[in-house]
Amino acid sequence: MTDQTNLFATAQQQLDEAASVIALDAAAHQLLRWPLRELHVTLPVKMDNGTTQIFHGFRVQHNDARGPNKGGIRFHPDETIDTIRALAAWMTWKTALLDIPLGGGKGGIICNPKTMSSGELERLSRAYIRQLGSFLGPDKDIPAPDVYTSPQIMAWMLDEYSTMQGKNKFGVITGKPLALGGSAGRGDATARGGIFCIREAADTLGLNLAGARAAIQGYGNAGSFAHKLCVELLGMKVVALSDSKGSIYNPEGFLYPALLAHKQQTGSVTGFPGAEVISDSELLKLEVTVLFPAALESVITAKNAPDIRAKIIAELANGATTPEADTILHHNGVYLIPDLLCNAGGVTVSWFEMVQNAYGYYWQEEEVHQHLEKKMKAAFHSMQQAAQTRKVHNRMAAYIVAIERVAEAMKLRGWY
Ligand code: NAD
Image (cartoon, rainbow, N blue to C red; front, side, top):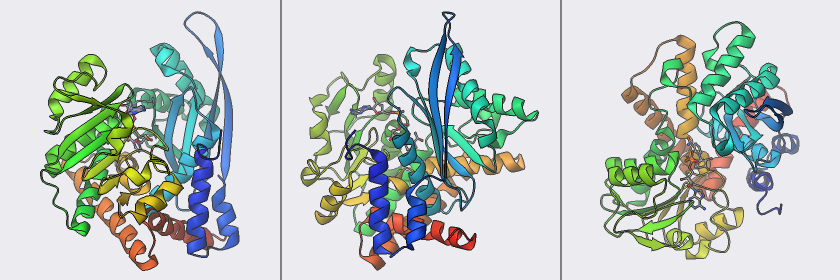
């Protein structure tokens, strides 16, 4: 793997650049470059055909100076410890930027969930929790769903953990089904948080969003809700969409219910009646007001950044833009809402879920939206203020706010 695709190298480079701008204490900097703890686990799982298959997994706790570690669990055949390290570090920065009293964690299992039965997935999920049990807890480390893990998987994990503890521990995991202590409003929280940021960015830039054009790369949880809420809350036209099978374009804009029904029936956005087929790279270069990368890492690079014509990039995907591309976009006047802020709605509502679990009282969806909007706006303006004061681009500003908060907590705790 080259440094360009090694996400942990990217995360360390981003930290190094921000640390140099704020002249961060050398010991604090070194401490923040690495996870505080990592656990590698080996999991024997009985498969439906009677054999036992051995899986490998990880849990990384990057930094818990401000509170227990928080972060999702991914099931993916190409999972690597470095991807998990980068994502755990980004969780530390995200929770600090949002001023949530949590740290940063992430976990993963190398497996292909698409080829596994429900029973095999349940046994794998329970085996992971049995190995990690002493590493987790509402005041230690709280997992959540991520790539290819679901509320059902969270329910199995919660059950295994509670069985090990001999009591119900709903707060050990978030993204649970509503019937098991999940929060209203978690489903669309990531996209909704991004939409709140776009509204603030448009105000800052003096842009009118009503009728303006948007393009979305990726049509999973983040991308499909971004489509819905772009239309419903911002009155925008979503003119281009994509998923792993291809990209489509319609200058009149795609209607959300029709597109969703098509995706549910056919498994893809491609082949939607009346849509023009475009390439993935054309989608990224369209002249739109908002471009949402909502699929993969490292899609905006030094190669295509000079051709990006969007006014705002709303990074719902983690790690969508490389550090070299950041500089180019900033130079070209593209307003970037970085992943640390743009997709933090998910972890923010996860924190609301923990709060509701802790006091055993559950909020209405409207209340969740209101609390989320307040947190997202506050974080947006902290970033904006740091960008102006320090004269840096938004990602650097977001890093600076987050690093200063984590460094202050580490200093107060006597870690350096
Ligand atoms: P998902 O698995 O639900 O959806 C991913 C989508 O990307 C799918 O539609 C897939 O077809 C599409 N895709 C894959 N390869 C593609 C390609 N080459 N071109 C275009 N589309 C492609 O995942 P998600 O939960 O929506 O997450 C998407 C991104 O958002 C990830 O980076 C994830 O880390 C980030 N994120 C998600 C959440 C959340 O709450 N869902 C929270 C924070 C960050």
